[in-house]
Image 1 (spheres, rainbow, N blue to C red):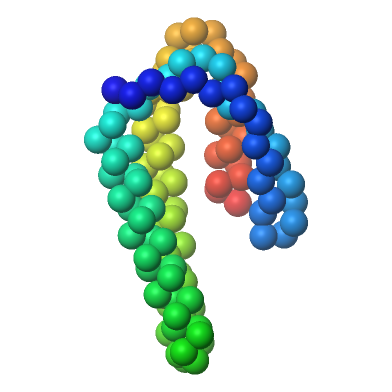
Image 2 (cartoon, rainbow, N blue to C red):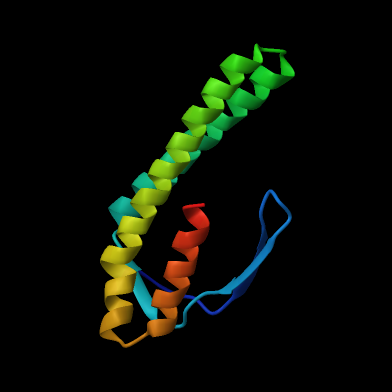
Length: 117
């Protein structure tokens, strides 16, 4: 298991221009390296798929075909998010609860709300 300690703040801006700031929790948490590798590989595949969709638009591909491929990319990203969520709950949140780290649980709940919009 890989172990990480986070103490940095990040600002993210969504497609609607809304700004979200979050800080990473301070407790140590572990991830299953094999699961993280699968998630990283899936992100690479989704990135390649999205680049292909971009080329479709640049090449004037029929918009209906582009939308179908965009729906496929969205599906891939939702699946990756689900995998990451399961990994995080199985390891990090279990550890946070055991350590009484309610802040990490609250942050996770907020992240789920944003992801599930």
